[in-house]
Length: 162
Image (cartoon, rainbow, N blue to C red; front, side, top):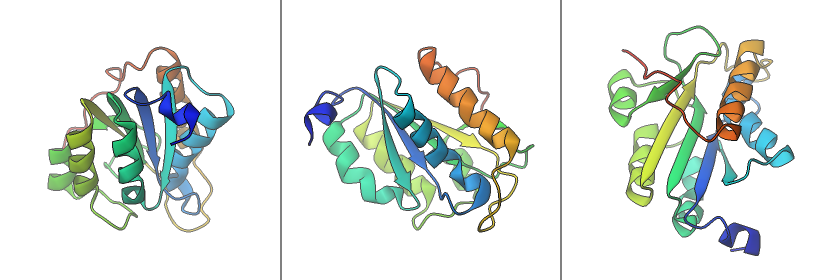
């Protein structure tokens, strides 16, 4: 573990998930890039890309106290809508995912290693290969970034209602 990452041990992690090639599924990686370009004190960004399960060992070593998972999630809302999700929401609704393992598996693993896990889903408009990112999804990414800058209170985002 690099010295800078060792300083993040036991801290806060933003785990960004998605594919930059699939339109609005790039929401997570776009947030990771935003945090890389303009870091927020107290938060370390981890870009899980399309195979977030590959980062589970790294996250275990970091042992974050708080973890924010950000991914595109088809919730039947307007593009760019941001909602907090629970594992049971994902399991019941079978929310769309482009990842190799079910998001419920990933959430279960994260909840075992972190004291507090928050999953924010950003409603995509389109996730076809090479789709442009919807302006409302870009605004949602900026909204989540602003929430991190303001101290990491995600209660402003309501839970999804299914």
